Length: 458
Ligand code: PLP
Image 1: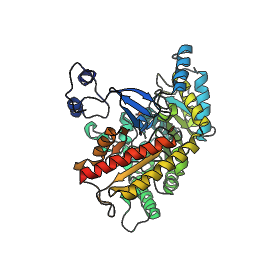
Image 2: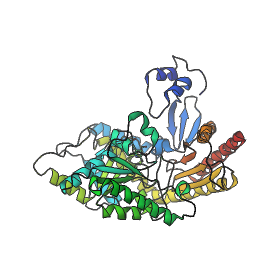
Image 3: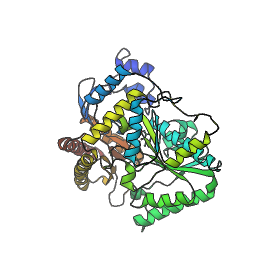
Image 4: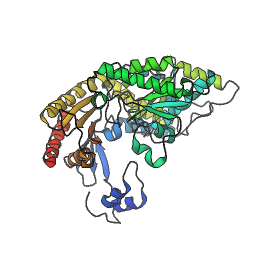
């Protein structure tokens, strides 16, 4: 990584022509890219042939690992049969129908519908547009604003980025757009005041939300969007009772609840969907990533019947629903997603994730008890976080300039383990196919890396 980047190497050519997502351009020019050439199960290999356990499943998404033959075969069969067709103008494809049935059934959104898109950001933006349609049809066209939460991640397109609660998604872009508001993040470890217990913390979050609504005017607010468990914001599982209490307030003010299941969905949290881990009942759900194990860019929104009725009413004069993506319901995407879901069902994904998640968490808790710099181990299923702190008793964070989380990532990478720091929270979201010995190996590499980091910090 620290070799000079030779202009004619793949690395040099890449630096010359390729602008990368979520990458520092100067560091890229100095160090060059990391080239990944192939995958096998939960491992990826770099250009020198060195294997890494990717304990982040790429970007929280490759639930079935990095070279699943059944997914490859499903894509290949579909490419040979019908490589593209669309779902505009009353067209459908057998796979799209079957996948929509499956998603409505799995999510429990009885009588609802599934809408297809290609990315998580598009799915989230689709939910916002549907919320606007819903309120307009019901005679409340002024209900337009969306409330998200601090530290949320909802995507990179303009409205999705506006819904993020992370400064780095806003700063250079002059975001959020007007009308995208933020309320407190339910991080009990960092957010609870002295003398406050979790129930009192939840009540304070609820009151804070209610005063934001009243300040802005309930007749201006369309929707509240949340991930059941914050992913990129630092693996934050809200305290018990948070979502039911928040939903009471949303109902009181006729505000829709949009559930971003883009990371949490398809078994990640030890339930089919994160909403069931946290006791939430959404009006719409955005699905992506695990939907196809990320083998094809496909996403979906599953919407409650009342939302669909509004769309129908809105277009009663004969116009089309004016929304759609070229690749909505792409035949290869739906074929891959159907195969991924079939595999999840065959492997009894929920039970498997619960067992592997409990094993990994057990390791992390043991490691955390012994380490002077582990403040908290948290999360659910195979979505776990370790928060590093300078002082455990007082929960004092490290000086951000030390970039302790980044230092861990670098050490772990050297030890053949891909984790992902979010500030000083270390994230672990491995492919869901991990076995007991994989989990033990992840924990072992994590422990070794943590010891190295402790020594480095002195
Ligand atoms: N929502 C959440 C919770 C995410 O983690 C992400 C991506 O990481 C997105 C939305 C955006 O998905 P995409 O990058 O496919 O647009």
